[in-house]
Length: 133
Image 1: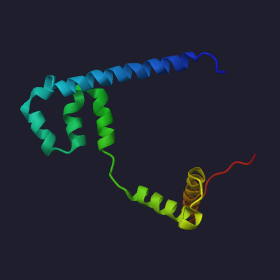
Image 2: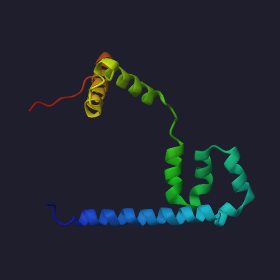
Image 3: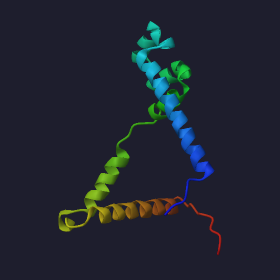
Image 4: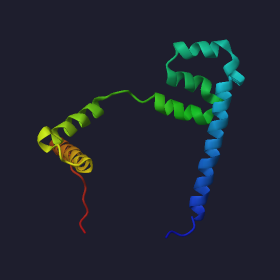
């Protein structure tokens, strides 16, 4: 049994609730096209500008959702990590090992990636500082 939440946990929960309320209020303004979003040039630039740039330019009136939008929309899009993961998973869960449980296959895929990363770092002459016990 856990005790009552600490003061820090209660404060953090309150902060999250406040930020959520701010984001919901800002989103309502955006959806209703209030303020700067009534201007035709702002709306026409949605089509012509890069999304992250548009939010950086016009999102100042909605700082909470603009910061999230900029972070999400600035991320490069690539499926290579997913493709690599599917390839590894396909090698692990082959027709010969079709009885392998999903949880075990996940752990094996994770181990494969960790070993691959360690090998890659070793080949790049990477050395991690270790402290003795």
